[in-house]
Amino acid sequence: MNVTLADVVMARERLRGAFSPSPLVRLDVEGDAEIWLKLENLHPIGSFKLRGAGNALLAAAPEELRAGAVTASAGNMAQGVAWWARRLGIPATAVVPERAPAAKTLAVERLGGRVVRLPFDRWWSLLDGSETTTEPGCFIHPVANPLVIAGNGTLGLELVEALPHIDTVLVPWGGGGLASGIATVLRELRPEASVIGCEVETATPLTASLAARRPMTVAHTPSFVDGIGGKSMLPAMWPLAERLIAGSAVVALDQVRQAIRLLVARHRVVAEGAGAVSVAAALADQARGITVCVVSGGNIQADVLAAVLKNADQPD
Image 1 (cartoon, rainbow, N blue to C red):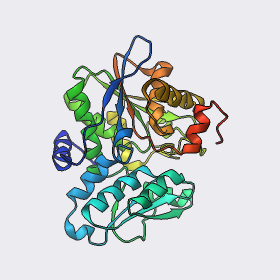
Image 2: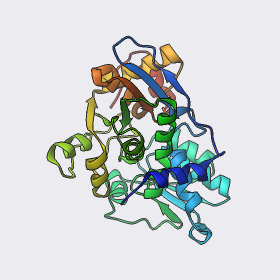
Image 3: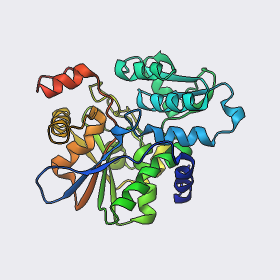
């Protein structure tokens, strides 16, 4: 699988006018590094997934979409595909893990999409390619799809244009489609910059794989950080990760809670657990020079957010 800067530039042309670039604001925190927030949580669906989903669907031939679009997603890519499917006038189906948060599945249905639940292991088999879905429609892989990665890479173009001397980008690591897309751009336009994949302690496939120099399977513990934390490095993504990702950062669940509270208190920004992982990493001394934390999404359930803001114990 190969994605080039030209692919990302073409993706930006396809997406032009569909949504505005996400805001980039300075994080109000003390320290030596200059830290910025790329607020992807402020997109119409509350997530960066509009980028990749849109590029994949807009690049598809009409006959490919005759039966609609299908994706496998814990929630945000499902919303991205449903949002674009409604715009294109086609049906959308989201295959989700059975514990997918209601806030995300209800949003998919509100956008007109159909939700199909599977046990986590069966759902994961759709991601790692060991099983294919029987749902009708054009399958849009949420991560390992060159068009999705190129669409995600448009975020990298925005970063380089806004901060030409950027040094570090901290990116939540789910499957690697966002980090790889951003790193594709930086490798060409700002090769001095490092892209760091940020994980939570409940599942660290990137960290394990970088250490072993091969795709690894790890223990996976469900938590309120539901947008990232897969049980393995997707084999199709390993060559990109090995070539483009400079390293990884692992944060604890309580550090994620602290980051969510800080974003709300100082910037009135609501991030979901996955979206706050990059900020948690920056606060844990992972920021270097001019650093951007990608706040990848803001689709957090109200009760989870309330518990975090009250500094209450958060259920796993």
